[in-house]
Length: 125
Length: 176
Image (tube, rainbow over all chains, first blue to last red; front, side, top):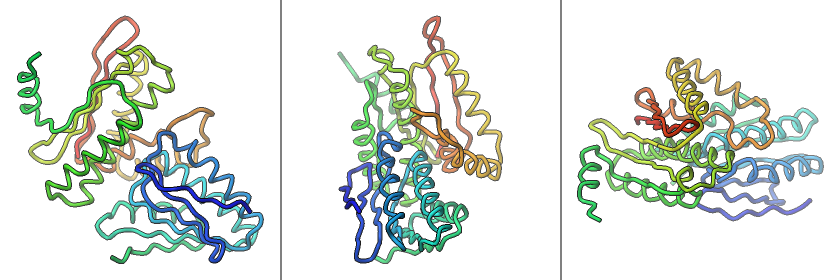
């Protein structure tokens, strides 16, 4: 499996995979110049990773994403849903800041779209 | 050149930040950072800061995506304006740019359509659009105005003014 390690910028989150825990971390904010170009390689990586792995947790701490990033995020969740239906143990942990209720609402919206385990946790400071 | 009158006009309108010129992603980022710092210093809730920022990003990226899609290169067409104003209650973010006549009408129509929806209808359409396959080369998912409406305190406004036989200048304002 190819490693993945994208460094955080002002408008793109850091994205990294920890093979020890099978966790894909997405941290930061997401409003890239072109969301579809930014997320396309990550979606490809996810598809191929989910062919090899038996479990994967997406660990998300994104404080803000623009509307096209939400579309891309749902596309990633669809790939995970597909793997889940094949028996791969996929799950999401979504971290939100108590002072940022929109992030919680967004997580709830996403959770309605999938059937695999989806936890929403408040970030501890 | 004396900018005093221009500055007075800005003050009258409550404009605290303004950019006028050729847009780029890095400019959008930098203005966004400055906007957040400015709002944070005003001691408003973090959620409200993010709402103003999010509306600004959607409007600015809409303009930018339009320029990229239409490969506008003439300086008058790439030159766009964005303002962030402080109102009695809340903030107003406005974008102004040149678009093709038909597109100007379509954008205003879309804004009116979203304005007429209930929050439930907006949520339903948001979910529908999230699920819709995009056309190749699309830069947005059509979700922008729904996202803006979610974060707005009142309905968006939109107006167009004729520039020449093929183009109009469109002004869009959202209130947070």
